[in-house]
Length: 360
Image (cartoon, rainbow, N blue to C red):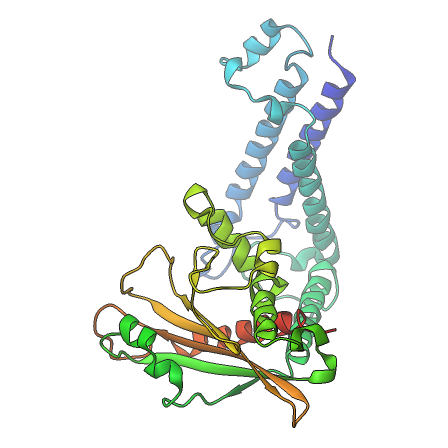
């Protein structure tokens, strides 16, 4: 006995196949592209018709198999239309969240496509053509306007959010360039890509308990860098790739990253290692897995610092980056200009989320 569930699924699959078919057929019966250099002209004419027919056949066959898939009926009918029914997967032939989501995606996509067909009329072609009028409305135009406005608003919001983060020159006399760690990791003194981001916060805005003992403020600031949402995506990516039994001794959960005091030797998400800690700064090695102990092709030092200035009534937070090629001789800096710019935007995001961890 064929169940009601099987009937509804079969009809839904057939409808999805039909919608897919009509979405690949040009909405107007026009001639082929008059432009010989139109590289997409292959999808016009007979190609679209054949693709439409193929989608109808595939959809109909899928619907038929779903209709007679066990336990909806006996296996003899299914075997007659499917030579190897044992290879069929129930998750593709019964109502499951994946099937439902797939059908809804096809239906919503078809609605957008057909709406554009109807709105643009003969100006919607599958080849290069000159429209008879300028179309400034319709679903595609609205989508373009929405994404443009949304993108501009997002970018504007980001730069407003990070407006207090300032990059200042990092002189070559800075201690990071003369530390024993830098000399060991960069034995050939290769050129560096380096910067320093500063954020000044009024002492009145900072959690007073973090000012009671030296070192607590920089610990909280460091914890904010790694446990904050600014690092969340990179943390999730590294966890997907590297979290396992061999890295179980490292900091991974947000709770551990937030509560750690970041003593030297602390390993962070298989990408950072604390190599120095003082009451005012914490320095980590970066660039590759801390399991690689020797000199690396790509290496770096990242410093998180706090300078409390009671006379000015502020605490000055700093994120200092120094990247270099450790293995082999290099003639140029390790990062091109556009990557440096992206790195600086990421640094500002880390700064803002870290500062949130030290406020009242």
